[in-house]
Image 1 (cartoon, rainbow, N blue to C red):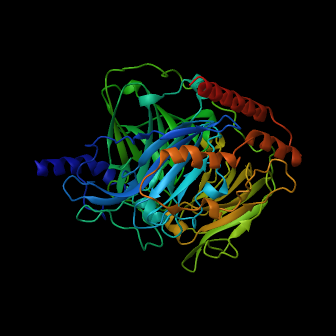
Image 2 (tube, rainbow, N blue to C red; image 1 turned 30 degrees about the horizontal axis):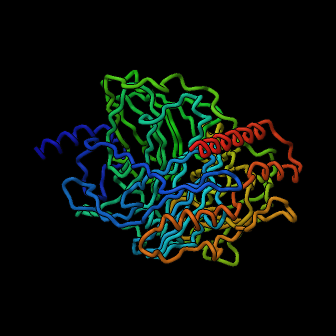
Image 3 (cartoon, rainbow, N blue to C red; image 1 turned 90 degrees about the vertical axis):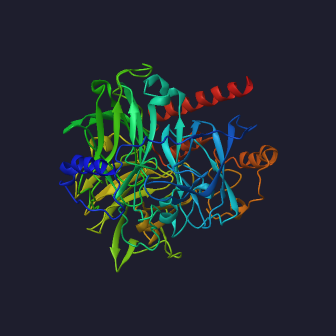
Amino acid sequence: MAFLRLLSFVLYSLPLAFAGDDDWESPVYNYLFEFPLPIPSTLAPLTTYTNPNTSVPIDFYEIKIQPFQRRQYPNLGLANLVGYNGQAPGPTIRVTRGRETVVRFINQQTRPSSIHLHGSASRAAWDGWAEDVLEPGQYKDYYYPNTQAARTLWYHDHAEGITAVNAYQGQAGFYIIDDPVDAALGLPSGQYDIPLALNAKFYKSNGDLLSIAGEEDEWWGDVIEVNGQPWPYLAVEPRKYRFRLLDAAADRSFSLSLMNGNTKVPFTVIGSDSGLLSQSVSTNNLRIAMAERWEIIVDFAPFAGKNLTLTNARDVFKDEDYFGTDRVMRFKVGNAVSSTANNGPVPTNLANLHLPPVQRTAVDRSFLFEHTNSEWRINGVGFADVANRILARPQRGKVELWKLENGSGGWSHPIHIHLVDFQIKSRVGGRNAVSAYEQKALKDVVSLGPNEAVTVLMQFQPHHGVYMFHCHNLVHEDHDMMAAFNVTQLQNFQYDTQDLLIDPMEPRWRAQPYPGTTNLQQVRDVVLPRFAATGAYANLEEIEAELNQVHGYAKREVSRKIRAERREGRERLRRSVVEG
């Protein structure tokens, strides 16, 4: 039986394997598409407090960073992992836009940790600054606004020098903001809205995870995983599905196609890092780099009773290929549809993007990402260079055009800028073009392929404070391709909160020893009121409007509509609280 399984695997794989490398670093995996796709559990809040000043509910969640074991190879031993609540990916947090959250992370592993809610416009004290760590046995409460447009975020480790080790071992999870206003679009929802975290790992001969610790260049991975399962399958109905794609790999980018035999199947891109696109884009190929998120709609209706395979191209940037890295997962399409809800045509027009209020053509700042003298640097500076690591001081509310250039011809660099959403304006060299779906999107990560230079336009609001920007190739980040920018506060600006909250290492908000249990009564009566009293996220739409006025930017119809939607959402929340 084992021989027949291996023979079938080899015969099936030959046409694809000959397209690229056919070797393995890990033990040979003979079970492609035999195990179902795991769906991360959804976490429920433990308690809720309503801010008496704003009527905004604050939901409290708790997540433990825990070691656990899982069998990745059916024929080998257990892999030692570290995840959130003992799972990887961690549990999904799903919130309604306008409801704030406090998430308590408790470190029960043996290494320090720091948590970044990637894509959230959080205050600096809760953004996951790399030095703001939770030591083993400590906890920290992170306060999040959830006021941005509905989007797919993710939370992951950000501890200085060991982000790759922690995230690679399992510390990542989805965090989704929903907006009831979007329901009118009729996009697939519920069981037809599925997150897919892509990854690539190396394993040892005994089935344990091969450690990334000590690696200084690249860690491609030859075992492709989706939601933690190597090469899974998903049974789907012959109807439309929404997939939220996240590249959670340490080092591997993907160029994805959906294949029916040898024919590419078109799908529709509807969302990016920063929420819905302005317009849907049909394509048969999607490039996704580390930390990027793209949302797609796939219509399986024409393929009832068939199998479709999600594939990855060979030779994506300079990534090393292995035997199975050209396949990702399989969809097994059934013959019956159990629900036709939200299964209509995908709308052409999706969202009014919250674009920067002015369009600049002159570059304000340039940053070179390069590998020089065996060191990963930004403009010659690394994060460990404390005296020089703040490379920019944009004024709060100001619009700037940044040029990001890849000066390392042998590597790609996905660049993440904290706090802001940005618009990709140009790409020169390498691919030499901004893709059709990038043109309709706002982003927080942009991929710099070999020898590429990209310009991105962004407005530095709503908060002031110190934030990071860095390469999201985690090996590069840890060695030391990360720097900071300081959004400087405006003098006498009338919307300053009671706490400035500009220092990511503010002592009042640092990690504390965990007492062993969480007292929910104390959380309701003391902890959540303390966060509410900061006024950290109050009046954000008014602040943005005032910042535009200070800088002389014209008000936009889009801004007024967004503010109206936010007011409507807050009123719905207030009524729901009052009515119980």
